[in-house]
Image (cartoon, rainbow, N blue to C red; front, side, top):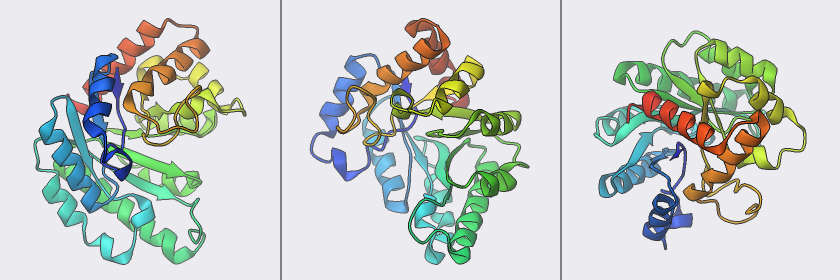
Length: 254
C-alpha cells in the first residue's frame, strides 16, 4: 500500500509524527508521499522525507495561496524540486470553494499559478499532483493541452468529468470520501474506471474513512479506502492494494 497524499507536514502531526509513521508502516503501508501546499510546507515535507526512508516529498503552492506575492515564488519551488527526495510537483490547481474565490481577480491569480506549475513540471520532468474543487470547466481548459504525467488528487467529480481527464492520460486518486459519499457519484466512477488508472490516498489529516470519520486521518487508514474500492468493483483487497501500489511506484518512479 502507498499513501500517495498525506500532509504529515501539517501541525496536526507535530506532537506524534514518528509514532504515526511507525504505526502506518507496521500495518503494511510501504511508502508515503507528502505534498507541499506552501513554500514552508514544501520545505517541511522535504525535511521529513530526508529523515525517513520510504517517505517522499512533493513541492508546490496550493491555489488557496495564489496571492500576487506567491506567483513569483515558483522559482523557490523550482529550487526545492532539486532535492533528491522530491518526486512530484504539487499540490497545485484551482479551488473555487473558498469565500471570495468567485472574484474574477482571485480566479485569475489561481489560473496563472497553475500555469506556472505546468511549466515547472515540464522543466523538471516531474509528475503533477492536481487539486481541483468546484472548478471543473476552468481547470480542464488549462490542463487539456498538458502532455505530462498528472494525477487528480481527492477526486470528487462525476464519471463524465472523470472520462475527460482520463482521456488526457491523467490518473485519479481517491480518499476516504468514497466511504461516506451518499450521492453514488464516486461509486459510479469507481465501477467504470480501469483499476490501473487508480491511486489511493488519505489526504491526512483530513477525510478519515468510515468508521473513523471525524477523527484525525492517518496514512494507515488507506486500508479502508482500498477495501471500499475493492467492494465496489467486486475485487479482492489484495488485488486492489497490489495494483494501486504498482501504479503509484511507476507514476512517481519510486
